[in-house]
Length: 322
Image 1 (tube, helix red, strand yellow):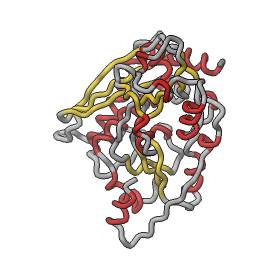
Image 2 (cartoon, one colour):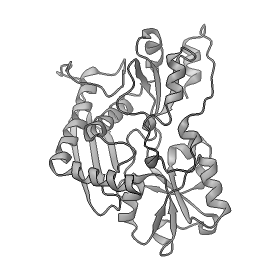
Image 3 (spheres, helix red, strand yellow):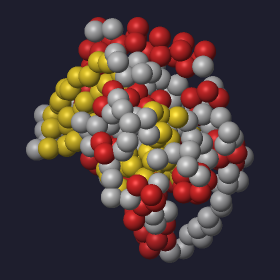
Image 4 (cartoon, one colour):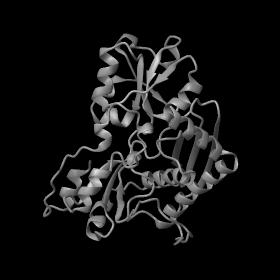
């Protein structure tokens, strides 16, 4: 993280890093979508925050629910790394890609979102659950012949220094990414104005606005890890573009739309009614934040008007029955 930046800006403050594990880290034999508990990767960390054992917590933003527990807020969202998914091949398939894998090759992923999109895009492949941390999943891939490839977040592989294992980056035409994927978030106690001010320097404006629109979209759809929802965002010429999609579990049924909005703060007023999906981004234009959230809500409404709720309801029921 930008730990060094905080130390440089606040030389009189002693910063201590405390490593912690969570429920999601410990349950390694069940797909996340089947566990059914929210805050799998955040609960223990928020408990420490509530007890004043720590003053700020760093998360992968995609692990944070769109509605945080009372008393907590996301104080900063760091510059996003590559948000796309990556293909990691079994060593015997080096040089190949998903298209060139043999018929019925098994690909591992713990994500309903990835599986739904990839089943439709690569119908010759089979997709099966694979759980565990990155080390565990790579070991399962390399030491057995159960999987020809696994799908992982490119940002996670880079952070662990395993970029050399990436055989293919999946662009939005192959597989759109999860809400908040590739971004780190700093969660703090909402009442701690000094801490909020301190971490606000870590905010990356474009990342904040992109992720706000994505989180607003997901929240409006009432989605989560138990349903296949995917997004793609970009900022160009003061315009924020949001593409959002919902899928059936097998990918055969889907809805996908794109909308855009201006995030230029010129002549825009702050809308006090807008709820900013758990993010308090000081030093980022409030009018732009409101526009980003509204974009997510509007896109959610558009998909709901076309039948998104029905698709997600069936997907949730089928996942629960598996």
